[in-house]
Length: 92
Image (cartoon, rainbow, N blue to C red; front, side, top):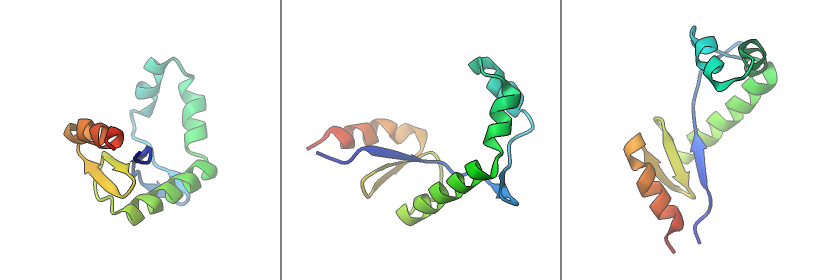
């Protein structure tokens, strides 16, 4: 059985804080969550540290674009490869 799939995403940080797009509030509102609270949490130094750790993990895997799906050491990138990654995960 293959290991579980991991997802890697890379976003920029500046001075230990996540940089969000200007329309972040507009993107959060449809989720039914309080945009101000979500953005405040997303831009904390703790989240930035977690992001940096995940980014380093992605670099070590050899990720160079997104989205990238990793199944063990096997990488699948681009949206159109998701089905391939899922099939690879379930193969023996």
